Length: 313
Image 1 (cartoon, rainbow, N blue to C red):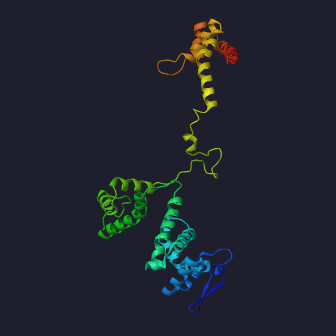
Image 2 (cartoon, one colour):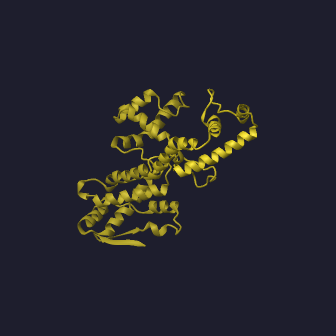
Image 3 (cartoon, helix red, strand yellow):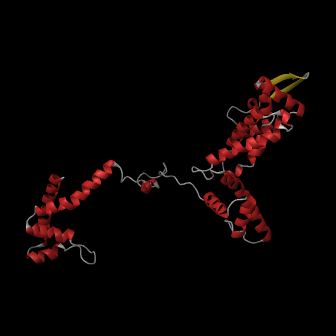
């Protein structure tokens, strides 16, 4: 597809790059097509800009956008270090380019390429801040400035250390570097330290990974969940407290003296060394019966207590 327009007696043909990109969407083909598009002269840029501003000529706006696609590709390469897809960076940069074309005034005495730089970078910055991490790492203007300068300044410090053959193994900033960065960027040194900590950390999935073994799947959500204030949990907790206090007392009173004593010594009275209550053999010696008989009495007492607790609840 080709756009054609008569301006001052000359015909300008601008190829549509999308027609040159394979159907499956090849990024390299798109970049190659963008670089083959002709640049506009100052006169052509001003003519198209005025036609768009005065007559809302979308065709003219399209020519301005297409002729600056290579600029977006060039700027987007500067942000590949954040680990985000190059195609996505280009796409966001194109959005910024279109915003620049919409607001560009040819009578201000600057070229579109200079005016569009801010809008392209701003859109890419916003995309990176929203997608680089699940949790936002920069929300204020100062934090954004730190975010996009910390990496490059750290790299310069590292290169300087390497040239001097000192501290080449260091991954974090030292006190002198923190002070220098805070002074250059006009922020507090505490903000530099905090941003470096944020950037050095990683995202942690709250839920277990879908690929984890279901029997062993574990994630922070397992111990972060607080259900103690849920109505059902509160009612169940209250019921457990009542059964453990008044209910247990009532259940013990329903037993005969010997059964109650056996249960208390076996399960309720703890030795000084926290080793538990009396054993079956120890109780058998007290009552002059076999350990098996003590066990039978204990089982019968437990069944009776369980029945009493059910009725009490």
